[in-house]
Structure formats: structure tokens, C-alpha cells
Length: 398
Image (cartoon, rainbow, N blue to C red; front, side):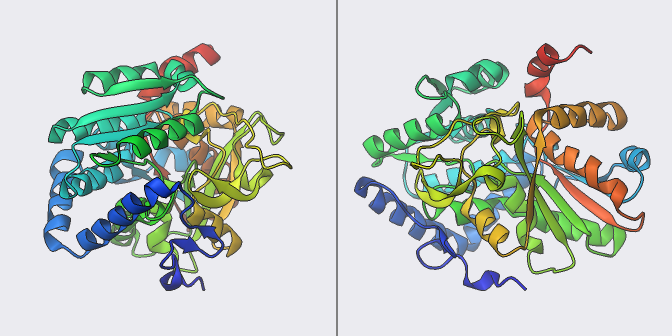
């Protein structure tokens, strides 16, 4: 049995992973954030306010939907989808953005910054900043701006300044770099709403706890519907917030298997994918220690994925710990398989999934037929695919 009580430790380490590897300038603001977060955790008024906005503004709870036609089409296990795609702004990202904006208010911050890959975290951050009247700047790789143009426009409509980052690979890693440079310079009045369960402590544990509402709801809902826990949880893994949000409330249930699905891109060859557990090794990047895609000299390798939200060279430290504990399995779906899953769910269930979520659906398609009809899968449908329609249309003739 995995002992969740002992991790993370006081320094934010999940075994050998996690921690706080940052410039001296950021040590104090991270400690300030850590202290304020743990105070807020114990404050019933903070939780009441967060619950109110998650319910009344964001649209929680989200349904746990029996995908009957997909189940019948595949044969085998009964498939449920946790419908985070139905949240306001279209993805699970709003859960964390709402929690962090309330923390920023408590700390008296007047300016919000964020990084974004697929744009869903950027849209969520711009949304909550507009809602509370705070200045907002979002950093996004120029390549991601091109392939996720719809979300760039959405952020701008919400009043955010979107800065296209034109260095390096022009994707998520470079966006994080620029956001961190901004934060170092403007830390006195600026809060950085990091969008995934990555980065320096306390971000991995804080983001996980804001996202665990996914798994808490799913656990209650499946017990109401089936009176048993699921046999398998499936979620896509970029930095890993949607997956750890689903997984965490089930970690101590040894009968519940968990599979995280990374971006296999064009195949597991250097610079052709973003599957950290398939081709990576342990190192430090952007504030934390985890599995990275790096060469023998420690230089970060380029990544590739059809999904901008999974196109990242590192994975959250709690996922690395779960991997080492053999509590969760991590596999991958190639671009080809993800696109096949995108169309299959669209045509069979009438649900257009985000390309990120399509990686999880691809794993469900692969494993459900190998399971028995009395077994249950919960797949986290972490986002909707509106943002991806133009990109997919360019790749495949309908």
C-alpha cells in the first residue's frame, strides 16, 4: 500500500522528486504562498467561498456520464466519462485558477500572470482575473499561438494581454520560462497562477488539492451509480493536474488501477514525442525535480505532440513518485491514435474531446475490450475540443 501521509514532506518532496529549485529572489514569495495556502486550507470561509464559485460560476459538480454507445462499440468494460469538458471555459483548468485567484486576493496581489500551452489554462486565468478585476498577462509559445488561435482571441476578449514567446521551440516550456522571469521582476504585486501540478513547492501539492475535486466527485458518483469503486482510472498526463486530480482520492484503494497517458507524438524517438516515462530520465527543470526529456549532457530535448497541452518536456513530481511506487502505470498514445480517438468519441457519443483528452480516450479504446463486462473504467474527459477543430480539419479530410 502506498503511504500518502508521508508525502510530500515539509520541503515539498515526493520521495526523490519535487522540492524547490529557484532563484533566491523567488524563495520568499514561494514561502509566503506556501504559508498563505496552508492558512487558507484551514479557513472554513475560504473553502465556502471556493465552493460557491466552483458551483455557481464554474458549474460543479460535473456529471459522471455512462458512455453507453462507446461501451457497446468496444465491448468489455463499462465506460464512464468524468465530464470536465462541461465546466465554464471548457476544461478542468478553471478549478485551479479559481482557487489561486482567491489566494491572490488574500495576499493583496493586483496583477496575475500565467503560462499556457493549449490555451485552456490561459482562458481560465483570464476569466477569473476579469471576474475579480485584476490585471492579467498570459505567456504562450508562438507556435502554440498559431495552432490555438481561438483561445488567444478568447483570452484577449476577456481583457488579458497575450505575449507570444518566440524563443526556443516556442511552446509551453518557453512560456513557463518567460512567466518565471516576469514573476522574479514583479513579485511584490504579482501572483503567478501556474497551471499544472508542476514547479517549485508548494505548486504541485496546491494544484493537486485544487484539482482533487474531480476525483472526490467521481468517487461519490460511481458509488451512487454502481455501488462499487471503478476497476480502472484513465487520464492524459502533460504536467499532470487533471490526472492527479482524478487519481489522488483513489490512491489508497489498491483495487483501483490508474493509467496516465502521455503524448507519444510521432513515436518514441528523440524529439518526436513528449512521453517522459518512455524516453526520459531524472533531472531538474523549472523549479522541481522529476522525469525530464533530456540528452546525455542534461540539455532539454525538443518535444512533439499534436496536442499543445501535452507538449512539455517534464512531468509533475507526484506522478514520478507514483510511477516509482508502481501505484500508477504510465503509457502513451501517438498522434495517430489520439486523432482516431478524437473522431471515434465525436461520432459515437456526440462529444468532441480536446486533443489532450483524446489521448486518454485512445487508451480506453485499447484496454476496454480486454476487460470483462462487469468491470468499470472512469476516464477523465478533461476538456472539450472546440479549440482543436481548425487544427484537426487541416490534418484530416472529413
